[in-house]
Image 1 (cartoon, helix red, strand yellow):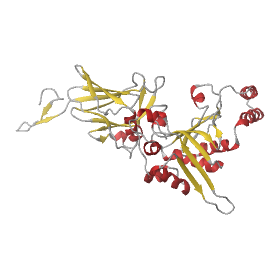
Image 2 (cartoon, one colour):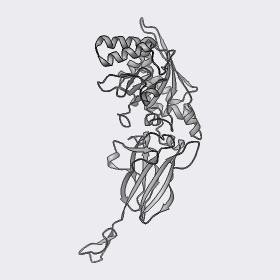
Image 3 (cartoon, rainbow, N blue to C red):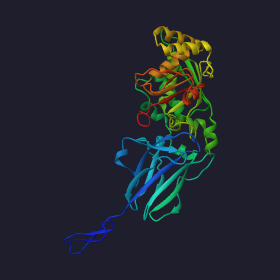
Length: 386
């Protein structure tokens, strides 16, 4: 019978040539994400899939997992492989099955385990994603790697016109599909118009989306164009929902204040699943803190005694500065199967797909105060956000 370290070699019995079958030592590779540069007070949920020797592991073939990013580093993600095997990550929306194009942070452990600390960097940097060895211990090699705006862009899927139809809910009207193919084919400017021809007694309808260029990607990516690099990294279901809401509420003009951005906010925006609107049909989506005294009293009355009469009284006062077209626009978004969340100055709905109604935005916590000046939707892609 063979003797010695089983991790090094074994000798087959009854083998005249005494052939040795080498068994490689096992090594652990771990990654920690320090996202304190962009999110010093909160955590970030980063989608990922692990590949070994350029092959995604079986548990990620139809799904992704989540890594926690935090100031100083979140919980480590780890994998154990044979010495000499390459480990790499697919991140963010590039981690979704069928969209894995840009593996990053590759390392090949040999004599020791490996730990990679990935740190966000603000500003314009063209650093490669290659981990750099910074320390060697008895059983561990420590590496550092950057997470820049350029790398965020690299790991965010860029949609094409050919992907539009499969990415939006079934039954999306033809005019919306045509408009989206134009957007993902490359806009010449920062506006997108869609016209629905007249039919019978129904007059023709045109709506226009105007997209604001954002400071965050421009300040943190070495070369960035809103129309070439930004808008195509937004999931088509988000823009499809906005266009449908415009049709449903007869809104002819919408101003989009924020789309894809790499180093600000939740993973929804960084993965291209979040879009923000600051003007709906001429109505500025703004509601400063400090509600009028009548509304405060009626809300307290309703909370103390939630009768139908008290509810209607409160809603009537709340809606005095909320036009019907804004209510209709929101209602369409909440009912859209391609939307998961809808937050605005009047209502907060953290899961539009459940049976729980939206709650009034009372601006009493960080998330509600954040949405006092715009409407935000989180789109669903079925993988990153289901």
